[in-house]
Image (tube, rainbow, N blue to C red):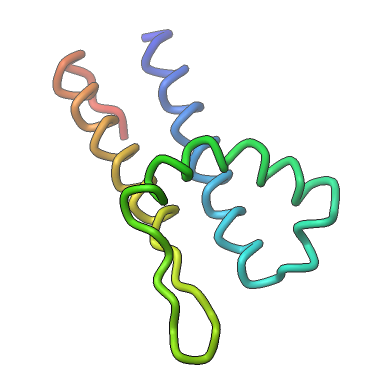
Length: 92
């Protein structure tokens, strides 16, 4: 049961971190705030391997579409489901 709770807290923290990273892309000035820097430093190690495989897509107006946070969230969710099946405990 203790492992179950730890995994849920870790999952929730990663979701908040990655959603925070997505929000930083909409508000670039926030990246210079200490909280924005913390979010970037913590989330980039998760996102860089995905970006190497699927780089951000450049659009016609100079913007970039980065799907790595969404892909990372999906992978984390799949891992949580696998652990759920292995442990025989319903995670959510």
